[in-house]
Image 1 (spheres, rainbow, N blue to C red):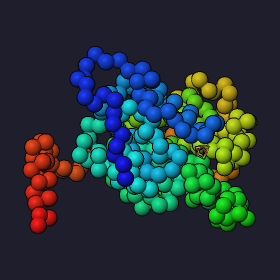
Image 2: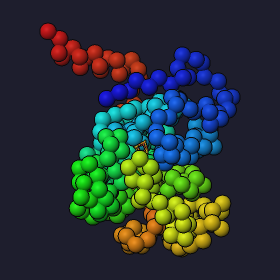
Image 3: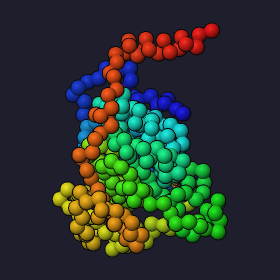
Image 4: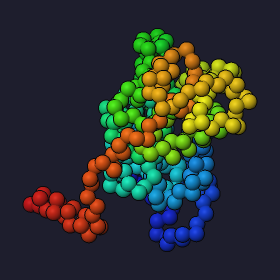
Length: 318
Ligand code: SF4
């Protein structure tokens, strides 16, 4: 587990008149493959950071393991590249101790829906205030092409060369079925304005904003979104005054479906339909209790924390 990402602002005094550009948030050079959808998602997140003028020292990116989990390295904010499947409990701990921080989680279909599935269920139920970007490319890409929980039926991989034998897990219905769910949306890496507006809506939601991002992996799953990318008529946009803004894309993506995101039953019904590609806000409920507001975590000074740590370490003195 690494927490070694050193923000560039450390060691310098903080000027309250700072103005941040997208470039100010750029950390290491992104090492994803050429054409990988992660690049577009990275750009959309940088747009949001600039638009909201989030101070780097007040912002944290947390990840597990996978291609998407390289996110924290590419920002000048704080970052925590944790263990496989453990991004959500790590982020929840950060939020409990420091509710003032802006917390973003980058996780993948394997990281979130397989090894991290238990944490996915409970983090949704805990409802901490954070944005969860679930980058779904339908494959384990970092480890070079194994079947993931969301691989399409029949998709051949190194672990199932004759094709995936089970229907894929549905991250939308899965999240919508968990108690206290408060925000579920779906977007795609190849529609930059929709991607940005969805992440922005998640950021402004008070609670656990779960955003499934359909993400192209040209290396291993180049076919699964190919037709949708080429033909906008295959995509339907969920529209509602309380939903995702579509002003810049409504002429290209002409199929619109009116959906009230306060209806959990309707959200379930739409998310369960495998024949339709529906992008937008499925569900939002801001009345759900937020973890860091209902859990009474004592606030301690730095000196108190050091004292407690020393007391704990003294227990192991020999
Ligand atoms: Fe992106 Fe796939 Fe390459 Fe990973 S393997 S960086 S998901 S294109």
